[in-house]
Image (cartoon, rainbow, N blue to C red; front, top):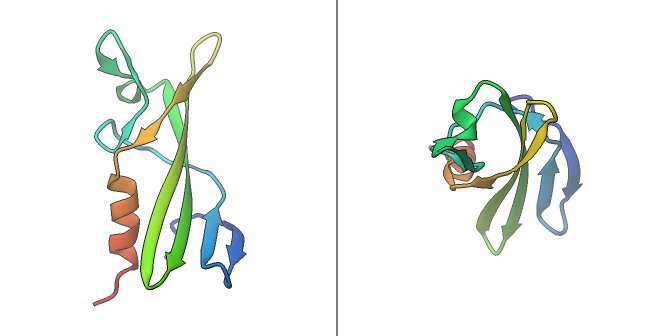
Length: 99
């Protein structure tokens, strides 16, 4: 299941794959994009995020990293520095594992 993500880089010999960034609703529990007055920007409907995945396979081990870009849509728009808390990566790995 692609979940709408488009692969933009696939290097089979290196075991690497990257997706294009996709507008994705994320929660403050999954991603830290900072706070204003002690409240996460992500709790405000004026915030939006895009998620890009990077998957690497090496020696039978799978590593998933994400890049999360956030924007707070006020005048002027503010770029948010976002850091994944690991939930997005864990969810992708869980979806990929077949029993």
